[in-house]
Image (tube, rainbow, N blue to C red):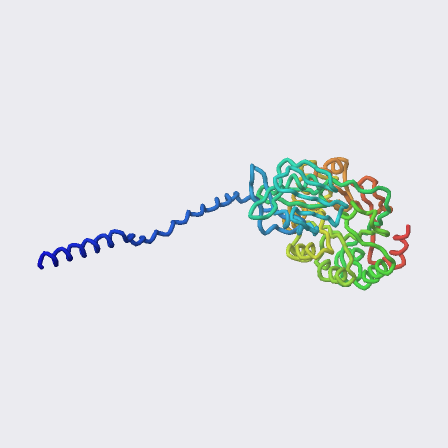
Amino acid sequence: MKRVYLLAFCLLFAVLMLTACGQAEPEQPQPEPTPEATPEPTPEPELPQGDTVTVEGLSLQSGSVIYNDTLYVNFREFAEALGAELSGEEGILSFPWQDADVCCKPGDPALYIRGEAVTLRSPVKTYRNELYVPVEALCELLHIGTFYDEEYAHLYCTVAAGDWQIPEGYKVPVFMYHGVTDYTWGSAELFVSPSVLEEQLQYLVENGYDPIWFEDLREVDKYDKPVILTFDDGYLDNYTELFPLLQKYNVKATIFVITGWLGGEKYLTPEQVTEMSQSGLVSIQSHTWSHKDMDALPAEAQREQMSQSKLDILRLTGKEPTVLCYPRGLASNTTLELLPEYYSFGVKMNGSVYYTGNDPRIVTRYYVTRGTSVESFANMLKK
């Protein structure tokens, strides 16, 4: 009997073992796959900072950068400083002062002006997701003058200082004033009464005349009745009396300053010069550095008078001056030979009406004195 039980137990044990062996082992959980690391994008290399750049009196906030030994500026900032309209991803630049649309394409060593490719010395590039252009090459193509101030490592870009062809044969009366006040000193005839000047400005506005600057002569054909108002010496009353009248009637005028006398008791301050230049109504031009008779000076002294005045005005206004008014209207042959190295126009005193195309070194003017009535002023306009 015991054998029977033992046999049954062995059979049961065997059955249990076989059952256990026939069952599949439970699957072990698989580890999650390790994601591949995303490579970090290569950072855009920083370009070296370049010189300060001022365009039409406005300093570019982003400055400039150096790429391949060339000075580059932000194209959008450059366009805004010129008052140009910029549109499109590639940058379509429409200028208010010439009939040209300019297109820039990244990586392309060309600008497209009126749809035609014009080769640049260096290509347009992208930097910090913005278009950057080689500023000096661009200015050269667009006839924008450049002046480099070595002492302060500062590049100035001025439209009027470019190489422009001025339409010829246009009549442009140019008037010479000095001070504007009822409180005269020195030679009384130099000071026009503010009330008389206001009558003259009213006459210009009401009779359709276009007071312009010398800078506007490059497009003189766009004006019906152009006229240029100039004020010599840079007296303080040009700010206190003249400037408010220009603002009231929205009239442009040119002031010839003696830069070595700025800040003197009866003369404009540097700050006033800067403010008027930024107003869009006053063009600041040169009357030399110290008002010496140019015809009596040797060549090197004349150079100093021209160059120092030019640099002083440039630093105050951010715009390169293009006109020199000869003190007392005196200029020698040497003066006339030197002038084109520094300025585009030379202005004398009394004379007849000026016509574009005449010698730009000898621009004559009508002299407006304290005794010039509105009727006399109108007659000079009609000559």
